[in-house]
Every structure is written in structure tokens, then in C-alpha cells.
Length: 288
Ligand SMILES: [Zn+2]
Image (cartoon, rainbow, N blue to C red; front, side):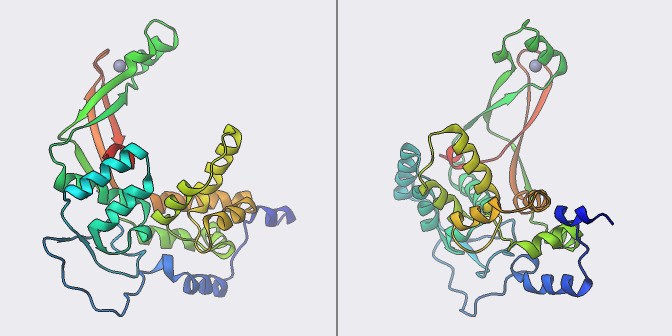
């Protein structure tokens, strides 16, 4: 074997080390044990729900959702006007009991937004821009026969299809058993991207320099996948990671981010008539 291989982190992990890694990563490999505290009585009018993560990332194994009242609606409106994620997450936090809102994973939080929207805001309509992907239409735009704006199709979301994917902890366990997964887990402490990081990132003073802002986004998106310490500490860890580990981290990202609810929208292009299927993922902005 070439000596250079070591620098690209393609290291064969001895079975005993692999076993140790697995034992030392219970937070991500196996479900978190439940806190010894007694499960509380269901709050009045609240619904007991199971998020797509099936509580695997949490110590608390219950989640109750209370009905939205006028005060919550006022807060949602304030969150929208001030573009404050903190106000949104605090409001969501006041509507749930069980897993604290800041501990929720990003996919579970987004799922919760859908859940609240479906159970409370049924009459509210959402707009979505779907872009035509038809080859001929795209060629016409590229060759200036048609305007770029003809590709845009405004869809009012009414009876859309909700696609829910549960968190696949078996796929994660399999990934961590591969050489690259095991090497990554040995190098850094892996975690779930959580709402507390989104809040911390919104509080961080962002650079107005586009290059700095891009750098910040790249590092913070990856730092959210690590566990322990502040987001700033974890960004420093990412700065020092070797390319092979970054690549493995991106594969890990696909597993811990690709679950939850996605909205599938099918529409016909108003210009060329071809079918457009696009995915809408709810965000704080589209919920409000
Ligand atoms: Zn078209």
C-alpha cells in the first residue's frame, strides 16, 4: 500500500477499535435511553405525536402538541414581520411539551411546522414557484427565443401530496460500519443538527462580505452535524478536518437530514404544457 493513503484517511479500522467506536457512540447509533422521570399527564386538548425521528435522538420519549390560540398567532405574525427564528421557535416551544424545542432536530422541527399547519391552518394557502425542466423550453430560453420568466409557474398549494420519510437508524448504523464512516466517527463526535444551532447561528453577527458569508455558511452547515461545544467551537473543528472526513461527513449529512416531511407538487407548465414535479420543503418563511 502507498504511504500516501494514510493522508486521505482510508485507514483500515481493526475490529476491536470498530467495536469501541460503536460502544462509544450510543447517542447516534442506538436510541437514547428514556429519562427516569415519570411521563406526565397529557395536557388538556393536546395531541400525543411521534416525530419522524421516532425519538431516537432524544432522551425524552414523548411529545404533546397543544392547540394554537390567538396569542400564538400574534407571535407567529411577529416572527414573520421581524424575520426572527427565535420568536418562531419560542412560539413552537410554547405549543409543545416533552422534547424541548431547542433539542428538536431540524427535520423533526420542520415536520412539526407541517403538523401545526395541517391541524390548525387548513384554510391557509401557500404559493410555490415551480420551474419548468423541459429540454426544449430550456433551450428556447438559453437561445433567447423565450424569456426566462416563462419557466416560472406559480402554484397555489392546496391539495398537495405529503411525503413522510422516517429516520433510518439502520442505514446510519451501516454507514458507521463502513471504513469511511468508522474513520469519521473516530475523528469527530457526530450528532444531529438541532434547533439550538439554528438559533445560535441567527444570533451570530454575519459578515457583509459575500466571501466571508459563504465561508461561514459552508463551515456552519457541517459543524451542525457535530456534537458537543458551541457552534463556533465545532466550526473550528470542521476547519481542521481532512478532505476524506469532510466527504464522509457529507454522506452522514444525507442520512441525518433526509427524513421528515416533503411536499410533492405536480403542475403543468403554462408555457409549454410539460409536467413539472417539484418538492417543497416547509421552512420558517413558508409557514408564516
Ligand atoms: Zn415549460
